[in-house]
Length: 281
Image 1: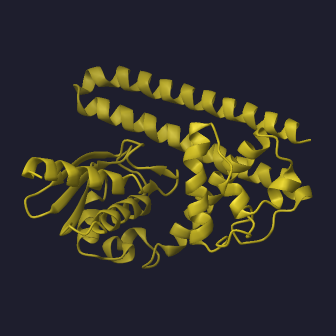
Image 2: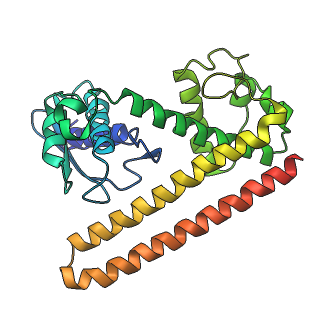
Image 3: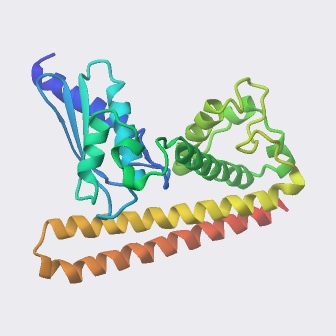
């Protein structure tokens, strides 16, 4: 393999690892959200990752989490000597970049933004939201296939694994949901239930409606925030590529378009949700 092909292979491997890193609040890959602008692999296998968030004032703890997760994901490649995430155009980019590079905790790197030295509680909060969002997708998909709530509540992991979904989004979320099930040890064996709460409690058939109502709130919040972030990022990128005076009107139009699409997508998802509820009765 010549040097050019090897370099391309390594660059592709970095992008594949970055695709596993999600925005903690949105549960969407940072690559799909458009946050990662550039990946560079140098001659000694050091990797620079340039990324940008939607606004200058995006939450410092979220930004730190993403930068640290990028570093960990890319550093797990056996050939990488050093992974160097570089956050741009953020109010505390310098502190975050230095803290992640030096292996500091969030509390050490940004004392003015942290009440403690660990982000474990924040990671856990958003891991719960991710689990619940992915789980709702799977339950609604199973309802759409004609499964009744009692069957879903008692479905085993092996039975869940055997089901194929035609929807691209559902097929994408299935392994992501299963990953969190196993990670939390909620389901390991084939006979283990595939649908339990994040705390491991069984989901009872008569509680399914109220349970899904809560999950729906989680999804709507995450979907709207995701669309808003995408719109704000599009605005930021358009401003970066144009003169400031001409960018203002264009940026406003872009943001309005993104918000209209966000509302439309949420409305469509609500219709699908209600349809699944009706079919389950």
